[in-house]
Length: 445
Image (cartoon, rainbow, N blue to C red; front, top):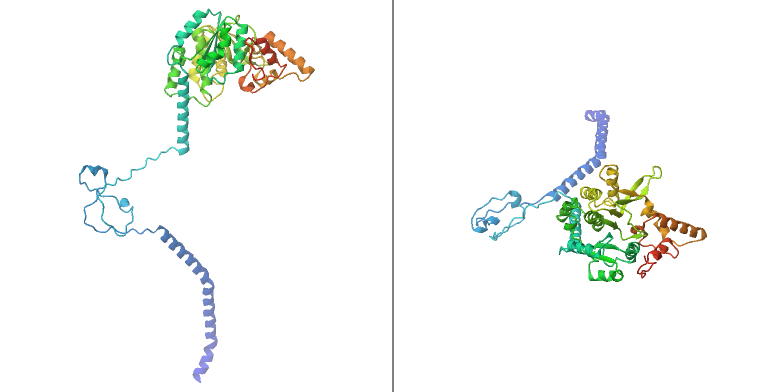
């Protein structure tokens, strides 16, 4: 009885303790899933990392056979045993090593990785290959027989020239067309007693001579010769530049090397022989005989009336003129094959602007109408026929101005090559006035 009453006396306290224990257990149970999940994730990550990066590296078995001779230097027969580093010993996994063969197996040499990126290295190789190809083409243009000097001397002496003209043609024979023939016709129409030397590899051939037969049959003095660069550039700043080019020490750049070579050839030819150089897209309108040591302005400053840019499509200079030497020197010192015009029109403009007013230079800069009556941006207007009566009057007035003010017309080949000569246009009338052989197709000029 006493025990029963004592039990009921402590029952509420026991019940309270049970509730506390129950609450604690439930709290632990509520928290337990999150902890288990975290522990499970950590376990999975550890297991995954262990399975991925674990490498079973068995220890080599203790074997007594003679060590294999794997060094190339031991091929001579010397038994030199070299202890390999552990990184090499465990490069191959082998559970049960069998007999070690004594066949010499050379170790892989350490790769010689370039620190230059592949793309840059590839560009460099391509650039070098292009440079070599351009130099090879340039050298193939030259006369290897060295007959140029003798032929030129014979041509000028026997022809009894009243004036000397020079042209260069670095392109193919097939591209020499009606426009170039018209330029030659206009030259002889205004200078029937002139001698014309065309420096060209392709035209100095049997087919090239056939092209010029109509002129030769009429008694005009004309010859095409492969250039001897060493002779032409001799005793000028171009000599050293060309030697560097042949050795691959000059970057030809992106601009056609033939074009830049033509820019230099015209200067060196005039310096060595004296006379007149003109591009093959220049149409001569009247005699140059009264012109001496002149260069033409392409554009002028409308405010100051001074020239703003010169051009080298027409050059008339005495032999060994000091300005020509300065041109050649500038070419050799500042050559840049990546900028169009840098070694041509811009070159002569730079030099003339520096030497103007200095003593010892005697030359004249002619205004644009002399050789460039129409700028390249407006050359299309000379090829267009009359659209109406007003336009017809404008064409007539423009043609009269050209005949009165101009010695020649530069056709700006790059801009007008694909243009068609329309009937009644200014070029159409100039062609009719310049005709000698008269077998050129005017529309395909």
